[in-house]
Length: 335
Image 1 (cartoon, helix red, strand yellow):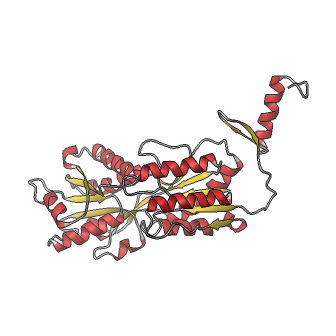
Image 2 (tube, one colour):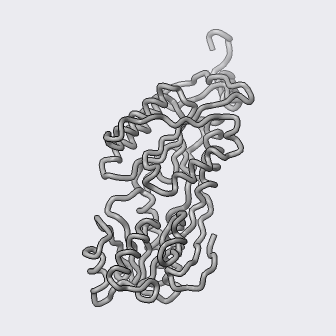
């Protein structure tokens, strides 16, 4: 105002236009900053921070989708070398985060740590360090906050509440009344969202809530599963938090002499590669992992172009894949 002899209104309009053109960045509570210029077609480098890669089956195809996205051909993905293998997952994730900050990457694709319980603080610390370095973040599959809380970064995945609903509704529509949700005691926020959808399906189908219990077990073993099947009103079907849990449950049930689906019916969530190869092919909710990766790259580039845009939940379609484990005729349902 002093330098150009202009009014406050004129300066405000000028700053808004500069922001719209992507020349400056306005950060609430901090100020207005000149953005680093980027020439058309110039390549960017993005970091992949996925501590559970190799432990959770969905992340490998998601990474493949990021790498195969049409926009990726102009840019590069960086796989950092973490701490020694004997270091904890939290230590490895934090060191990898610091490597990306040191390399001044243009953005980070982050799949928050799922277990053990103390990973919540680690996930928040990673996000805090990237925010301080002003590096855009796109979250994959899950948020760093417990459901239904939400952080201020874009999230790409499926509507996990809908996934839980689809799985439970399918069993209830077959006439089952005692359907339970089964999960490990430590799980990602996605599990809580799936439980919410499971309970919503019970209400929609007028199923007794007492018959639709949620069981969080330390381990899926005969000692923990048997009590669920020997009660007077034993469980008729299980919605499992994911396909791995469903596979573990199926193995335990068969060892105990139960037949799937004749004695107990099972539905999983994720539709990982081996779901159709289990002893009884698994009915499950399909998660389009490759497409999630492609959408994540598009979300990252959109975020870089509009840093002040409100955080978005980008949900891709999930659908029920019916196989033998639920006892129904095989067909594809729901979208």
